[in-house]
Image (tube, rainbow, N blue to C red):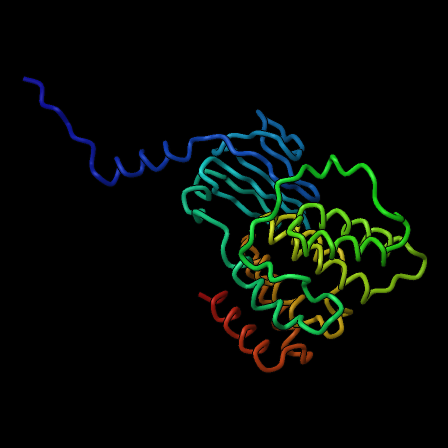
Length: 270
């Protein structure tokens, strides 16, 4: 007589977990050199591309990858290396959290600077406008006008539109013969803030990377904390620790900012 063999519980749980994440994911954002394994070779990844949740991807130095899947899950990567996505999806948090929560904290630190938020945006999900529909920009060669337009859009809750204005202002500043590095930081931070408010963490980190926090002046504490928090969410705790340690060594953080930096450093060591 044949006897049935039960699947051990731990094996069944493993199979169910694998099945739960055997779904496709979409490339929400990519920056730099990111490729996905295809047969015996590698193919470049593009925004909007659908890839299997069990695919293998490779990130070059300085690259970013943000994937989304059904149910609102996101997978964020920024450290150079090769990754099998299936085990990462199994441990991915159900929602984006740390950077969005920290935004309220860093905005209080930015209060009084030229990049203070026109409204309290922490935890707010912005408009879903398609940025491709913004076919014109006011005085495209004047970063001050573009920045003001971004602030106006942000104050009205049109965060996606605000990021377009801020990004264009940053491009103009960075392409000038003599770059105003502090102005670039102010603009990059404003763009990142609006991106976080609309749930676009990949674009937020890319914006912050477009300027040097050393040149951020009074905005340095907020700039460094938001950058470090995003780096941590993208799995690059080492770079986050390096930035925060640099800031502490150079005296960027005082008072509440120092407490937040120490708390984030402690969390990154766990």
